[in-house]
Image (cartoon, rainbow, N blue to C red; front, side):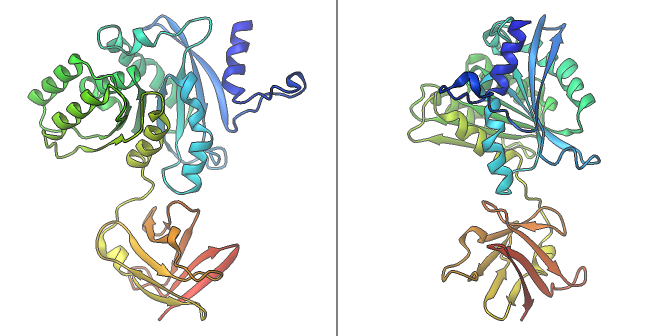
Length: 356
């Protein structure tokens, strides 16, 4: 019982002030809860740390994508501030984060669970037959929009799952994956029996990491397949190493696989293009193809362009936003016709501009 309480304290006590520590409670992560899931397949009871979107309780009909994080006892902290900043800045979709953690009483079993030559195949079965059904029974998640994040040996497991149980997840993020000969063999076997790999995949490694050599080789081998349904990208940071790439891989990987912007037909953007004036400033929106409107204008209080709002993206056919800033744009007028008004907030002021 003491060990289980200690584990909860580890998960919830993200920071603990050393001065007068016995007087202050640990800082808890909002919208998070701890569960335990005994696995018959792995003969282990995992700690499951679930972080919910802030509006989860207020939107009972909404279904969310799910991010599964292995080595969750280490990386669940990323679901706090980095997640909040990404959502605040409209960078990624709101999602449920599920961190799979090892407990003090059970011991750290990552070498057993993640490696291709150990029990990685069983760990995939744990996800498919125990963990994912548990999460999708208790939370409002999308079975079509699952993401897996793993670092190092966890990255090896991420690639193993990608190549041997592809449909388990729609999106895969591999941080400094330990690519071994087995992974190359699984990739070649997959290519020999499939003509497509319909997933989103992101790989990030530091250039100063010895694992970058095989990481580059894997990216090259995968890219040469030219799978029509594969959307993938990669990043090799100039000064990164095995101990520093994780936050970058997490943030950039999520931005790639859970992009908050949707694609609209060109006509949906073109009808919004034009110049709008609020009597004091003129805002020019142009469309040159792609998945955004270019925004050019002068805000109320500055004599410089709205650099944070250089592009306007779509969340749906009627919802538009900027990235890197909590900017929301509303267009008025008849559906399907050129928009007549543009409204947004700037420094707490409501601004409405009329088409010129």
